[in-house]
Length: 574
Image 1 (cartoon, rainbow, N blue to C red):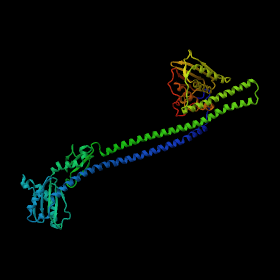
Image 2 (image 1 turned 90 degrees about the vertical axis):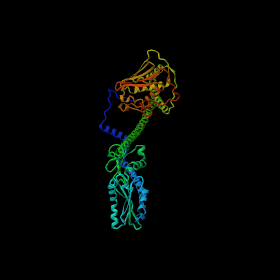
Image 3 (image 1 turned 90 degrees about the horizontal axis):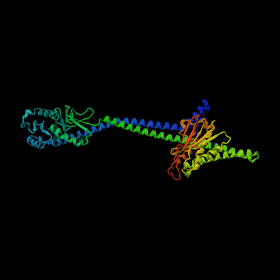
Image 4 (image 1 turned 30 degrees about the vertical axis):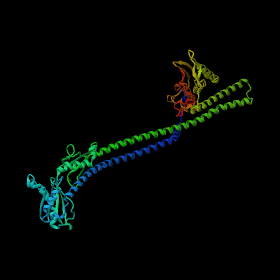
């Protein structure tokens, strides 16, 4: 057990050099722990910093990747539309050069009439070389309004054919006879295919005027459904299609989608039109920020958990270091506690053996000293053995009905005999009415009370008075041991029942002990279903009270467990 020094005897003052030396010693002992903590925290900080920069870079690349994905989807839609019209043009405009020979106009008209179909507003053919007049299928003169109604269409067709007329007048050789699109008049989009002979000479032109309403109402919705099926099913993306006048062709709401939408123009035909894709839940940048926030929060949470784990690990290591130091002190204290009484026994025994003491009174005095030191050794060994049994779970208490008052009086009588001639006075106050028998282990209760009395004697200082009080309080029997010694600081009163704990005051170094006495008292009392507490003030003494229940304690079996808090090896002295 540990007590603070009495108020009348202040602790010795230490010089600055001694304090600095003690501080250096403490720092050296804890240096490995602090270094481990610093390395762990630094590593965790570096990991979190790298994670932050990686997530920040991921945030930027994620928004780019999302926009790239949306652009790829929109471009896929444009490619599908281009493929549709290229296939349509190849089927409708592939004509053998022989159809442009003189006299085959009727056959060419019949061929074009046969190929006219959905998506094609009008087919036409012309031969710049042979001055073939422009052939339009169907004939606009047979439509309501006649040629006047188709004036703009005529102009658009001639504008599309005029570059080829220039080619025919200059060289007549066509280098790229593929499909060519003319969209100078958005109302009449023209696809032209030059027809060449085997020598790549231009013999004629075949083309078609696209039907915009068919594209708007039939081709475009089907292409969106096939290219962007998830848009309709899961509503993951909103899609808008806008014409060159920035009017919404497909899409809900005014305008052509929010400014944050990804916009891609169509390819091949309707190149002035754009496809806009937008996530209704968030922009790519907002999605990336949300992902960044979630991941950095998760990283910080993991870092906090790791930091807590590191702290707990270091705390456990610190406790083990303290335990090792306490056990080292324990070995030193046990050695001293054994050596002192053995030396006394040896000296008195040698004096008696050598016959240097012949007076009966001296022989009796020396014999009493040997007996007292022997009892002290016995109590010390009993404490160590009991502690060993408690730690290994092999401590067994034999509970029987017993007279607690008789046990207490026997222990006090034995201590009174031990302290005879030392100036100590031990008084006992019994109960006002006889106590009922309690189911206890008489030897264990004797051992617990002996430890309390031994502590009271050790730390009484100048106040050599110890009082024992036995009383009934409700359903409990209280055994209180009070001394007028040096007392215990409030901060240590909860620790003194832990194994090996010693309060770091000057009194501890004046009184030797092994730090097991009160831990064993606590275990014994709790094994009987009771408790032990302390009331103390520095300089005013201490009162330890054992609470034993009158009702029998629950059946605890043969082997009782070690006391709670046994993992933290701390407790007072014997």
